[in-house]
Picture 1 (tube, rainbow, N blue to C red):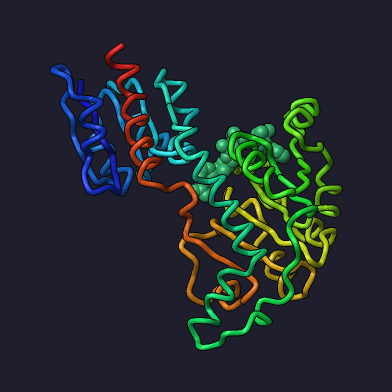
Picture 2: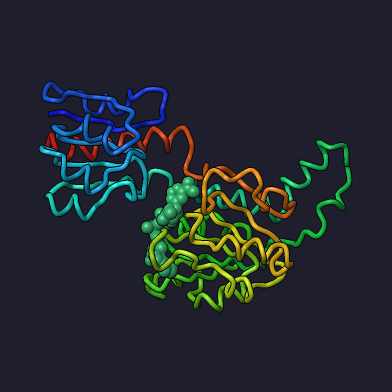
Amino acid sequence: WRVVVTDWEYEDLRYEQEVLHHDSIEFIAAQCRTEEEVIAVCRDADALINQYAPISAKVIAALDNCKVITRYGVGVDTIDTEAATEKGICVANVPDYCKDEVADHALALILGWTRKVALANQYVKNGVWDFKVAKPIYRLRGRILGLVGFGMIPQGLNEKVKPLGLEVIVYDPYVPEETIRRKGAESVTLDELCKRADIVSVHVPLTKSTAGMIGRDQFGQMKQEAVLINTSRGPVVDEDALVEALSGGLIAGAALDVLEKEPIRPDHPLLSMDHVILTPHVAWYSEESAAELRIKAAMGVADVLLR
Ligand code: NAD
């Protein structure tokens, strides 16, 4: 079997090679950027492991032997899944490699923002030693955390915030109310969540129905002391509306790991806002999650070729 890694961004591919170490497998590491490059390397491949290289309908039409395509990550937006399915090619993602990391990161952003860690750090390093630069800070116990989406990551976050004494409300119309109640949270509508939450944390996947789901209407309903946390996907939040809400004082701040367009452009208004914390789409990452991602992406191929 020919297994091609279409593109990758690690120091080596030792985890993938270990999983796929087998007499019947020829392992090929490529760094394709364009459809033409993928077609040239992968035409007669039996399996692909894909990072960002485009696996479009055109590419899929040119694959003669491919049985499985796995993706390093949760999203499969680089792959035309419909075209693959029509051709009988399995597409596999790695949905669970970083659920703890992202929940931890959301928690870090919640604590970092509400305790003004980044802001205070900036002042101290610029020679200002004065707690008043962080004003106002409100006690966290008793405040309301609103979770938009209640999948794997926010359910983990819900457990992690219990010792902090936060009240948790949830908007996820696809999760039964009973499940939400059993986890010690309350199921509400999106409108109610926006009105009641002190911290709004977004955890829905990017789909047609979630793009721009947190926009002008939602910011208009939020409390002035509210903070928006986003560790899901940038386009779920309407960024123009967010910038307006932040500059107009409709909400108190934001802490974002993801943006509509990454990396952020150097003149982006969010960069000059003191009440905004930004991290570079790092929530998924730990040494362990990165290893797990690569092992599981390779196992997806092994499951199909070597079973
Ligand atoms: P999941 O698939 O377990 O759950 C998604 C939840 O969203 C489901 O419960 C679903 O019912 C809900 N949902 C879907 N559409 C909705 C809508 N219109 N309104 C309300 N709820 C809706 O996902 P997860 O593992 O919890 O991950 C959440 C998101 O986090 C992922 O989709 C991904 O985009 C993002 N993520 C980010 C990073 C990062 O590094 N920042 C890493 C991994 C995942």
